Structure formats: C-alpha cells, structure tokens
Image (cartoon, rainbow, N blue to C red; front, side, top):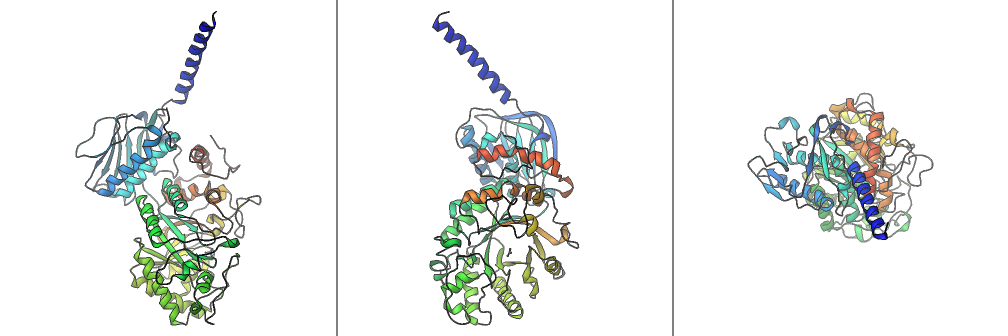
Length: 523
Ligand code: ACM
C-alpha cells in the first residue's frame, strides 16, 4: 500500500470510530422518569419519545405580561451560548408550529399556585404552563436540567439537544426557600453575589438573606450615617480590607435577584453584633466612647445603648433608607445573641424596632430570641438553636423559618478534616444535611407554623468565592429539595443517585464542590 492509501484507510477508520462514539454519546433520552432532577418534582409521567431543539427553534410566549416575556428572554439567554442557535422570543395568540418552545401564562392554572408549573414535552413541542410568571421561571429551570448538561457551557458544543418526552406537574412545598450569606465577617462583591443568586435560582430557591452588618463590618451604605461604611465597613475578620455596597450596587443586586425570582431579605443585626456601628459613632455607646474596630470572631460582646433616643434616630434612619431600596416585603432585624443587653432593655428595644419596621411598610423577621418581646405585627421568627423559642414563636402567632444549626448551617464542617468551616453545631455531612424534615424536627411544630426553610452561610472562615462554593455544594441542592419537594417523596437512597449525577453539572459550571464519599459521583 502506498502512503496515500494508508492515510485514506486510517481516515475512514477514524471517521467510523468518531461517528460511532458520537452516536453512542448522542442516544436521545426517552425516559423522563430517569431524569436527575433536583428538587424532585411533584409528579413525572414519562412519554417514551424525545424532542430536539434545532437551529430554528423559537420561544413563543402567549401573554400580554412583560414578566412572562422576560422569562422567554432569560430562557433564550440560557440556551444560546452552548447551542449556538438564535432562539427568537416572540409573542403569539396561536399554538406554535412543531419544533418550538411555548410559554403559556394561564389564568385557569390556579391549582399550580404562584410558583407551580406544568411542563409538557411531546415529540413536536415543549410547553410550559403556569398561573404566574414565577411558575414559568421554575418550569424553565426544570427544562434546563433535562437538557444535556453541556447546555451550561459558554461556548458552542457540537452535540444534539434532546429532551425525553412526558409531563411534569410541579409546585413548591414552602413559600420561603432561602439561603443567607454573611457578607459582614468577610465581604463579597456584587459579582460574587450574582453568582450566588444564579446558583440558588437553578435549584428553585427564592430568597437571598444578606447579613449586612455585624461586629466586624457594616456593608450597606446609609447616606444619613456615612461613617457606618467609611469606618465600620473598612475591615473584616482577620483584618482584611472589608468593603460595602453603595445603595446603587445594592439596587443592582436586588434587580438581578428579581429577574431570577429571588427576593432579597436585608438584615441589620441589632442590638448586639453591632461593634462596627459602635466603632463608627461614639453616640451609639452608653459611655459616648467609640469602640475599636474588631477583626476577631467572638460573639455577644457588643450592644447598642437601648435607653438612648439617639439609638432610635439611628435605627429609624437605617430602616427608612433600607426599606426605600428594598422592594421585598421583609426587613430582618437580627436580634440574636444579645448577651450584653439586659433582658428588659432587649425587650424594650425589639418592641420599638418592630414599630419602626412597620412604620416603613415592612414585615419584620428576627432570629428566634426576638420572641421574648411583645410580637404584634405578623412577625416571622427564624429558628436556629433553641426549641423553646421556636415553640414560643408559634404561641405568639408567628410563622417560622426553619434553620436548625445542627442540620442546615452551611458553615459547619462536613467532617473533622474539612479545611473550612466551624463545628460548634457538629459536622454536617451531605446525608445528615438531607435526612431531616422541617415539620418533624421540633415536637409541636408542623407545616402550618412554617413559612419555609433557610440555609445560612456564616463567613468567619471563608475568604473567597471558591470557599463559599465548597460549603454550598453539595449540601445546598438538598436544602432546596427539602424546601420544594413533597416530604413523602423524599428518600435519601434515591436522592443520592440523583445528586451523584449533578457532579457533571458542577464540573461544567466550574463549581468548587466537596466530593463527599457518601455519593457515587458520576462524571
Ligand atoms: C446565629 O447563629 N447567631 C443566628
């Protein structure tokens, strides 16, 4: 054989090998019930066929609603980079042709509630129906997980984009499904917060609680009290340079979150956890002396001067300015660990702050200790450690956010070898994080008392976004499932298989996750 002939033969063999590897990889999925969806939907009926996106697929939206149209634009933005297809978004009154995606906002889909959706995939068309735009958004998140995970890449991929056919009907268990990020102990900038929001949204979480002030740093600009940020925001745990959000940057975060159906809950922690404020203004201290900035990790040593009217002028300004830039219904006033505030002063303080929050048209959330005060305005209490306070909260007519530290504090180490995190509430491996139920956790507390679930991430040991991801993943998807999926459908043995398949997604999105050996990771 001549060299040319050998080359031709090799080319043919190579081409056959390439095609067969590719066609193996490209077997279209046909069993919707095998999809590794997190959170698990309420119901899945498999159809047995498959639908393929192609270069002319369009996204039709049957609604006058701008919000529904924006969900179409968001979906196009998700699908374009990896497919390289155009995904025009168009309004319509008619049923679209085959090959397209159809988003329908329908007044008759009331049984789906404010966040539910029905996703119907046939060989011809993908339809997402919802009563409210939020439902369309969550249908889109489900569709996103049904596509090959290469859909998450930012560059064009030469693969086919099939989805198994069938019908998914889905709605959340709890209205409040959140995560808290402590930006006070260490500060994280706007781009980091946007990435955090995107990661939450992909798992159908709908609240980001920002812990904006603590002993080590004040992180939100208050125009009438500028030293809070110029002084109080100037450092962090370990003595780093700190930082803060201007009101414009905060608004940018709020808007970015809103486009992803996430409500920002801002927290100003009062009357303890206030050293950064006490270091900024002498007049907030009972002895009228400024405190030193603090860069350690102790808690419980600071308090505002609760019997001084200047303190209430301060709180009024802070809540007024914060309420004005917060479209969501809640302001979180902290209230935890008031170890340096006399009990009667604490009660007096919380009662007054409650009135201020109401004055500015917001609903108060506080950590569980606030139940010692005379709660009167539909408060929401965030349970984190003390069952007695949780029970007292429901006695006082409050709704609970369930954040039991021993199960859901994302800053707890996975085990004794974890390089990041703390362990005062034990070690929380990925199975332990999943194996509990909010309505079974405290005797006497059931679903009717619970507004929702939140996984807080305190940042004493976290310096960069990689550290945040390591604590979030793989636990956060489990918390999202606890908040969304029906309790009776949750099962660890089954969940861990689905979670194992999400590592491919983590890899594509370059998420720094903890590769727990409780999970058989499937790349
Ligand atoms: C808390 O962990 N101090 C709410």
